[in-house]
Amino acid sequence: MSLRYIIDGNNVLHHPDLASPRQGRDPRFALVDFILRHKLTGSRNNKVILVFDGYPPTTTRSESPENTEIIFSRRETADQTIKRLLEKSATVKNILVILMRLMKRMLLT
Image (cartoon, rainbow, N blue to C red; front, side, top):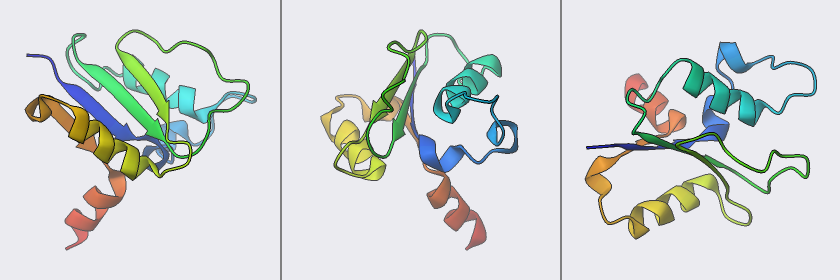
């Protein structure tokens, strides 16, 4: 059984390993590379969907690496986009949603 990880990308971008991407490098793509390089999703069959607030930059690379997808929420928040993705999915039991704000709140209470 493969899993899908849906990650609110803006909430993860402040990780120490991603705080200083190389000059001129988009930190969103540094995040994708970090996830893939460290095999954070386990199996190669698992898919990562990174959701970012707002619109894509005009200088964004046109394709995502294998088993990754980058979504920009455009006029809605990333949280709203993630909620919509979950509502449209037929198999939510195979989806892990990573929202750093929510995880921080849960750990502090």
